[in-house]
Length: 153
Image 1 (cartoon, rainbow, N blue to C red):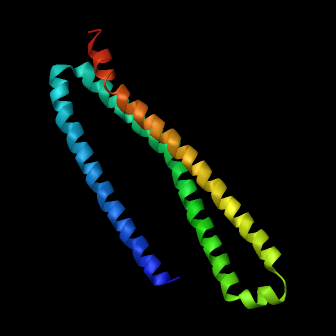
Image 2 (image 1 turned 60 degrees about the vertical axis):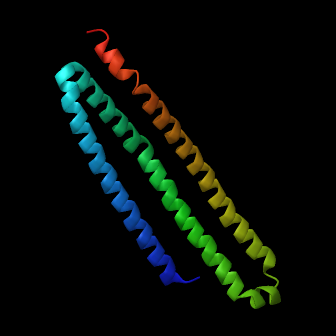
């Protein structure tokens, strides 16, 4: 129920994620440039092919799955906040709800909010599963791509 504590936790989580994101991006670029130079000295065609493969995979992941994952995360946070607000409102007004026999109406509103949240979570799981399958498939295909690029030459 403490809003300040929730905000502090959200800020802490945001900073933690942002720092890890920057570290991952820097590490990835260093790996790409380090290995690209070695691969280019061995086979320029393989180097260009691997770079195009990685760029294509990154674009598919960020443009295909990124917006959907972001959308469902935002919707889930909104719906959780609305559900939390409704529950707190009912708790604060429990005496009035009981006196005016509004339990059925409040239960109906709760089930509607909860069903919407549950639907969003299910859709989020489907999108995350699709992204996971794409990511794993893309990862395993990286073992075949260099061989296919160098093989015909």
